[in-house]
Length: 241
Image (cartoon, rainbow, N blue to C red; front, side):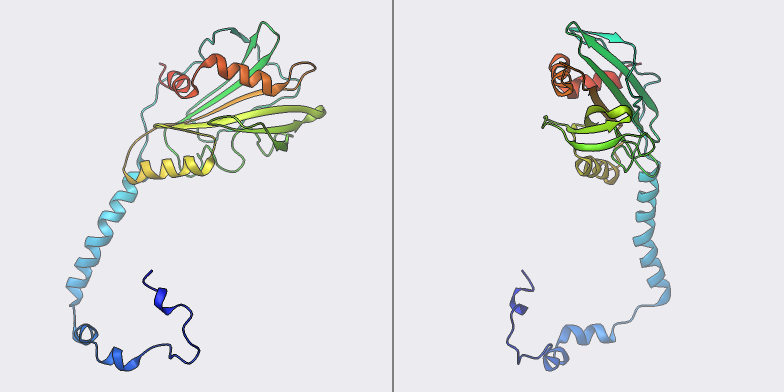
């Protein structure tokens, strides 16, 4: 807005008005103003020192975590052996806790659940970083297409060894935020660092393989309905001891 009057100026207008600059009393005072080296160094230190202290505190910020976490019981589903047709294991570099297990219901549907819990987010431990999550670069799996839209999560179809198709629904939880968006998680983590709030971050992935007569998306949707709202369900896991 302050620059608006300089837009679309006539072609003959000068770039600056030197006479107006020379007549400026403010610029004249600034031209003769001087500051001694000791005062300059003290002023610079007064600006830089708090910034360095804040940055150091933010870098060391870690949230307290439980010693152990567990996958809970889910109504209508029972725990089952984790036995995928094509091996699948998400990546969660730098996470303090990782859980990977399976659930099955009476209709023969199976859902694999992965949860990673981080005390902090930073270099080497970013839940939404490249190569993290359901599709790790060294796994033999390839991204196939976007999955169905699901609230508070991002779903993707993947193709693995033996042409096995798998759908994975990824969500992130930190503070009061539950999202499937990596940038949204990054902004939430950035806000915590700026305010020096120590909050853990969780990555939760609900996934299923496509099997004859048992669509993966239907299995994941049914499991989510059984867990109830996902945010408090994740919180119960991450607060277990």
